[in-house]
Image (cartoon, rainbow, N blue to C red):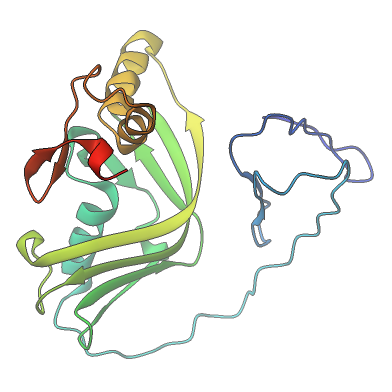
Length: 212
């Protein structure tokens, strides 16, 4: 969706049939999110709040891991270990605050600005507004065999950097068909077998209709 603002700052965006959230963003101001459930009125008055320019508070926390070790783990659990995940580069790693909570054995990440992620394999530049990230372990460890769960939440904005559209589109289709969104879509429509997919519980194949 693209739009140009008028002299008074107003702009028009057609939100009919909106399937995604809309992010209103400007340098030096906090991001404003319009959820897909929200647009029920014809006009929305949006006022962006200035970012706090104060320096970050310095907090000294004893950590069993170095920043380099925590950043390596963050990339694994945030970007993934697939071919597409490994091709990603975070251009502004310095914006990420990392710490390991020794009470809960959790790696926690926060970002003071949107993360700029270059996906070389799919030819995307992604701006990701990280709101929270937590990776839980069953020991004071960052190893994958000790990882119990990882969750993160935020908003993403994709910019196409395609040079070879045919190759990029093929890779994007493959990534989509191997992703969670495609799996859930087929699970909801009962088309797992049609698309050669199987539902597992505790490592064993089961019938999805027994659980949903």
